[in-house]
Image (cartoon, rainbow, N blue to C red; front, side, top):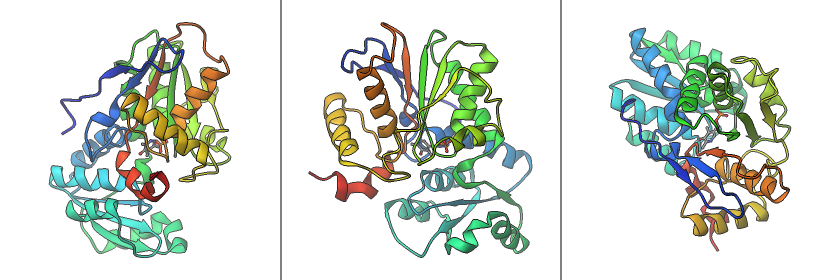
Length: 292
Ligand SMILES: *Cc1c(COP(=O)(O)O)cnc(C)c1O
C-alpha cells in the first residue's frame, strides 16, 4: 500500500506564471489522500513493528485523517477506532469510515479535549492499541512528509503548502534542510491567528530558518470558513484548469499563490511548486455553498 507511489509533477499555466507546478499528492489514493498517505506511512510502520493490532485516533466529523486511517487500517488488517468530536452525526466521510469497519465513538467536546485520557480509558479495555493523534500529528508523520522534497526539482524557488496542524509543513522544512536546498517554504495556515503554526512546527524541526515563510492572511475567517471570494476562485480555477481543490485547505493555498502573483511577489521564471495535499472528499460537505 505504501509503495508504487503515483504523484506526478504537473505544470499549470496560470495567468502570467511560467513555472508553476503542482505536486499531485491528491492522486496517490482517493481515500488515503495526499498528505494523509505521507503521514500514515511511517505511523503504520511503527505500529506494525510494535506488533499493535488496533489503531485509535481522533478527529472532527469531516476529518480526512479519519477516512485515511480507516482505509489504511482495513487494507493492513488492523482494527481502527475513532473518537469523533461532537454529537452523533452522519455524513459522507463517516459513512466511508464505517464501511471500512472503523468503530466511531462520538465524544462531547469537553471530554474530547483530553485525548490522552480518552485513549487511556479505552486501551485499558482493549488489547494491542496504538495511539494516533488528531490529524496524524507525530514525528513519524513529519518524516513521511519530508520525503516529498526528494520528489520535487532541486531548483524549486518556492514551495507552497496549506497547514492545519503544521506537521506537513514541518516535514517539508526538514526535507529542505536535510537536502540543503535554497527552496523557500511558504505555509498557508487555514486557521485564524496562524502564527501558532511556527510553534507547532518547532516540535519537529528548527523553525529559526529564513527559508520558512508564513502567510497568515489567507484563512478566510478560520478553519472550514469560506468567503464569496474564495468560492468564486474555486469555481473559476476548477473550470479553467480541471484541477479540483477543497475549500478547507488547498483552495486557500492556490488563492494565496494567485494573489501573490498579482502582487508581483515572484521573480520572473522562478520555479514554484504547489503541494496538492488532497482532501477532495471534503468538498461534498460544502455542496450547499458551492452550488451555483
Ligand atoms: C489534513 C490536511 C492538511 C493539513 O495538514 P497538517 O499536516 O495538519 O498541517 C492539508 N491539506 C489537506 C488536504 C488535508 O487533508
